[in-house]
Image 1 (cartoon, helix red, strand yellow):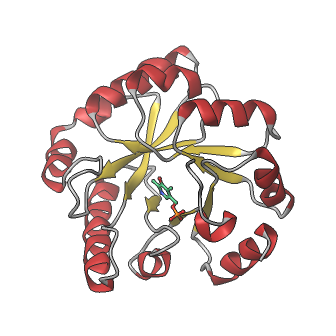
Image 2 (cartoon, helix red, strand yellow):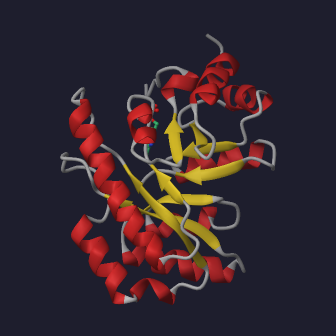
Length: 219
Ligand SMILES: *Cc1c(COP(=O)(O)O)cnc(C)c1O
């Protein structure tokens, strides 16, 4: 099936109020343009260099989302144009985004990443750290950061019950964060393999790559 057909199918499945991020990491500019011509405007990348070069080459009304782990020393390369940073996983990173966003005279939308999976390798705050942060007032010191919500990744497993539990946990944390953050409207959870479950559990933003573009070749 073509990229345009895949996009159409997925869009028809998504309830109103769920935003689709087309995850285009490793995919060519031609493939992104194909999705763009089918009406897609939000694309997700996980490497700064790759996102910058695609930003420079492709239409300027594309909204670029950084969905991967972001190193502090790379914030400066994307702060001028990034539309949403999903993977904020430390206060140090938040401070760097604040500093660079102030320098660029922008307010940058961010999600805090929460570690909900069993795997030890995934980045993010754990729920205890998040609760402590929410209670501490520390997040109020970032006038150039707009906290829009939370992002998380479930364990990569066929055990749907476990995936559902993890998403449900993230939704609980999101509901708590919303009480503290006036601009929070985004719960980024769900990928190609688990987005229907994520939507049932309250996702407002799904990040879908391989179901749109086909499997990735990291060669
Ligand atoms: C690659 C990636 C996705 C998309 O994964 P697919 O399984 O191809 O849909 C979503 N979120 C993050 C953070 C990713 O790195």
